[in-house]
Length: 266
Image (cartoon, rainbow, N blue to C red; front, side, top):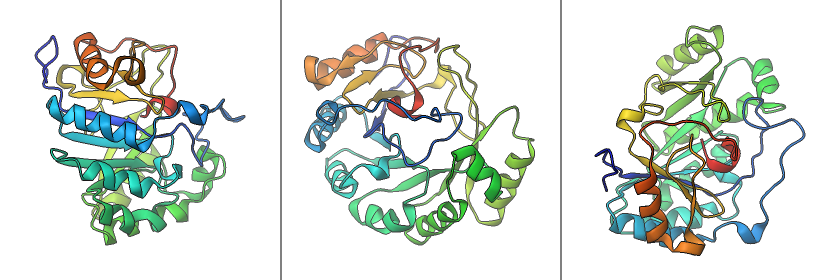
């Protein structure tokens, strides 16, 4: 698939839930959020059908996101359904790692290939503060479980507030070096004000090379995280929604006052 600017679009990020077991300060308000109604969230069969149509249109790379995807009931079943679709060549997941110790091996067995794990600090007290109560050791055990399950390369997503030279970021970088992990530094973004930058160690945020579309948990295909357009797979059908998003993809991200990271997928 190629968009209007001749960018090769071969990547679909799929949010499977807006729910999360953390309340990270840069992602979610302290009081929580108004959750989607269960009937509005796509079923496994609907998600898999979108994947089949996406593959037929040339998309081959898929990433499962949330919220926190591992809180979606029977997530292993969904991974196995997606992995079984002929033409899915790259299947990965972004997770906060809290439940990964339990799920790493079943995910691998179901067909997941690799994971990105959020880790903004290796200081337990700061981690608890940033995530509003999260336990760092659970994430560290999840990282080891991912390595043991061969969900590699294991990549670490580290959000920075000013630069990757911050104390927490440099400590995360050293932790990754010592443990054979790949680190990506993601500068804190602001959807409503259109503030974003290129991911250090990755290609996210580089509009010139953007290759992705996004599917929200309630079935909206979005051409860009920083764009308010969306196209319903339930109302339009998966093929028309995907192609409409493709043809509406902007040259550059702008802003998004209608969505949030927890319901679009980071």
